[in-house]
Length: 315
Figure 1 (cartoon, one colour):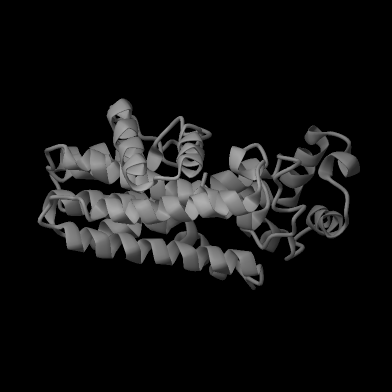
Figure 2 (cartoon, helix red, strand yellow):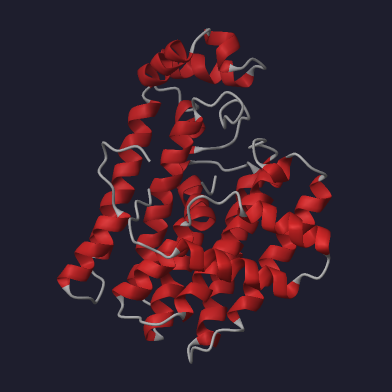
């Protein structure tokens, strides 16, 4: 759901990230492992969020590069931990080596990201550190709820998603604004949760058609599964029975087109789209409340809110 088009200096961000890792890690094998993981990053959405809010709130200077590097390092460590815990996304390099090594590397990356904040020269450093830790813990709580997989209804699922996905977006957005102003803006935190919710719903929709990374086949209590379990029509009931079995959708339905048709007939596709659009509308309304000039509000909207006809990871 993040459609950011700011010209963040990726080379400078990469240099800052690699310099930080190299300054803290003396074990050559661990260092090379972490650097190899970081090189999988082709985009820097969370760093861009921090940069967007820093500039929107009038920030100037090079400290933002250091903050964006810390934010991206934390986000990558959470991606690795998430994959190790969910046992999916086997295309990634950290899923194709000894998981103990990947776990240790991710823990080291998380710790370095925290240490990087202590190197900020900003007068707002301690506020930033406290906020960073608060949102990181919220994301961990959301992940724990997701891993327990005993969510009872859609409201509980939305709360989990807002914590798990929205907290990382809030971490980046709020700390960017904090670095610029020294203030935490409640509206920034609130719309970050909605942007995170919309993004996760979009990811969940796309993953419906991924045979080897499918929340339905794993029987994860996603919004899609909770909707289908309510059995609104015969197609939803049929899908629920299929999900309870052991076949993949390709084995059961023969083609992705047939499976997609069944999903459409069940109503789950429409449901996910409506829920996404509600989150987008809430985010748009909250962005309008940001205490900034109108042109800056429009800038935030243009970079955070995408058109519903467009198709755009923490999953």
